[in-house]
Image (cartoon, rainbow, N blue to C red; front, side, top):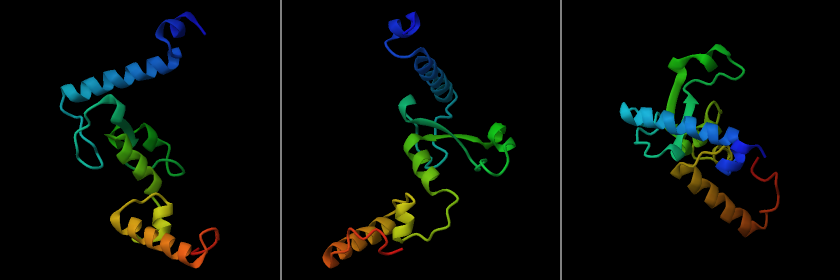
Length: 131
């Protein structure tokens, strides 16, 4: 471990990235831009801050990765759940949508009902059931 890492108590690269995130969050707060792109709620700490692309760039166009107009800030949880469900072809209120990460009330309810039914019929361990 190098001297910087020893003194900081964590790897220097990790510390540098945390510092960048703190600086970015400080600027967002200063200019009142610390609001989530997904839900509109206030982002109150750097721990919940996430930077994301508004439009998916992977397998589409690498220019979208660098386009600052394609960058937004969001809660880490909002961005993570969006990432799991974005650009997927599924219908809400289905077990498939739940498997892709959707946690809307409809998908949770249908999945819970499906699980109860599978337990009742002894099919819980059948991985191909419902596909």
